[in-house]
Structures are given as C-alpha cells and as structure tokens.
Amino acid sequence: MSWLEIKRRIGELRAVRDAGGPMKEPWAAFVEAVRSTQDTPPYHLRGILAALKDAQGGRPAAEMVILDHGCSGGNTLLYLLALGYRGIYGVDIGGKDPQWNMLLQEEFGICEPRFFLYDGETLPLKDASVDFIFSQQVLEHVHPSVFERYYAEEGRVLKVGGAAFHQVPHRLVPYDSHTRTWLIHYFPPGTRERLYSLLGRDPRYVEGMLYLRMPSCHRTQLIKYIGTAKDVTLDRLVSLKELEYYDGPKMLRRMMGAVVRLPLIGRAIGQTLKWFVMLETVSVKTGLASQS
Image: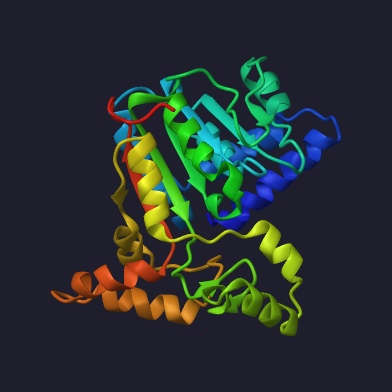
C-alpha cells in the first residue's frame, strides 16, 4: 500500500474526528493500512524507522518516548502510533493544532496532551525525558532568532544515549521544492528577490518563511547540543528507487540513483553528489554535549 493511500485513510480519520464521530472503525482501517507496509514502508520514513530501531535497542515499542519536532498535521506520529509506539509527542508553531489528543484519549485512554502548539523556543517536555527525536524538513523554516535554541532544546529533552534524526533541505541543493525554482537561492538577497518577483513568487513570503543554510551550520549545532552528527544522506541516495510521491525533478533523481548504485565507483561519486541533495543525519546524545 502506498503513502498516498495511507494519507487518504488519515483524511478519513480526520473527517470523522472533526465531525465528532467515533474513531474506532476509521482508526482500525488506518492501522491495517499501516501494518501492511511494515516490510516496505513509505520511502520518506525509512531513515526515521531505521534510526528509531537502532535507538530502541530491542526495547518494546510502547516504552519509547518519541518527539516529532515540527509535526505539522501529525501524519508520521500517527504512522508510528499504528505500529505500537504509544509514547508519541508532537509540537508545532503557528497553524492549527493537529488535535489528535482526542484520538489518544478515545482509543488508548491517554488523557494527558501529547500534541502541542508551542512558542518555538521552549519544548513542553522535561529534561532528559525523550528517547528519540525526529525533524522532517522543518529547520529550513526556523527563524534565525531561534535556530540555535531549536537544537539546544532537543539536547535538553533528549536522554543520554537517545538519538535524533534530521532531514534538512539546505543552501547547496540546486532545486528548491518550496518555490519550485532552480538556483535562485544561491544569489544574494536583492538579486534573489528580483528573480522571485519575475517568476511570480512573492519575495516577502519566500524571505519570511525560507531560511536555507549551509550543511555545516546544522552539523555544528548537532555536535554542540547533542554530541554526534552522522551523515546518512548517501544511504538514502543509494536506496531510493521508487518515486511515486517524490516532490522534485524525478528524472534527475532517477539518474542520480542509478549512478550511485554503480558497482565500484558509485559510492565514490555519491560522496560528491550527496552535498547537493537534502541532508539526513543521525545523532546520539552524549554526556559531553552542551546543555545551555
């Protein structure tokens, strides 16, 4: 079953929730859909699931405390919940509260809030209380004034030995999927704004919601506040073959995948290509990381 079908099931569940109806049947249908993908999960979740399994270390899924740092509608957390991960938490800033607390209460008897809108600065969780954190394409929207705080708060709530997984679009990627433009973000601000205007994009909107940074900025923060920063971008380049819902130039992505899978030379070429695609990292919290 595809991710598109799973999203359709989430839509059905959301419609019942918003209408105030019982969620038992649509939730059961969603769980069935998710569990049918356990052997071949949606490709955008495979890195998260692999990092989570490593962090889990054989512990029961229900014992893991998991934070989605920028959960939007909560789709990934619902997927994990359907796999048996009960200790889920999601935070987001602005927009509409995902409102899945109602589902947790109705189906699992969890009365404490697990989904939050927060101020973008202080996570509503205790120190050293989380086993696993993931962040999917969120950091390019984090304002410079709270960029370092984003990582510092992850370091605060993560347990020593816990792990964090980050997917980060960055400044070196030539195609920006947010504006659907090539190379414009390489230019200085004034030129960039004029080019966006010529293409019909509102530069005030773009400049107010998109903060593409160099990969080294993210690694520096991970090492400072969590302790390690293992780059797993190449693993995704090698493994990604199906592109059913890929949000980008599919032909180019297929060509890159074919190149990095070539015998002998593929991995070597991939070490260069990985700098021009979305960064993926896995970090493990050490006791030496900063808590400030």
